[in-house]
Length: 114
Image (cartoon, rainbow, N blue to C red; front, top):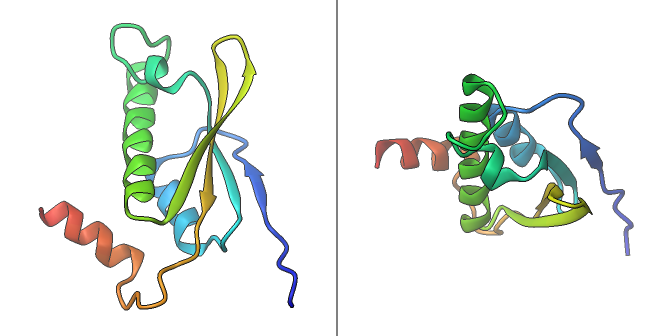
């Protein structure tokens, strides 16, 4: 049985929805990406967030894309508690469907058209 080396990544800077999609497209099963550190629901909420508006909007889009990827069966989403009201939000790549003749970009285009 061949052993696969998994990649664990913590983004050195806030990542965008596009960065996340790029990672999903090239990740092998078991790869992990920490895509946010904080309290996502509060950090993305307009009235409560301490982030600048462009950063808050970027994070909200990223959170929605991560949820979409989980619903599409591309990743598992997990949280690791770092401290009080502090979590690491991690996407874990899942195996790509065997019968998937559709690429990630085709799935994204289908969603945009809907």
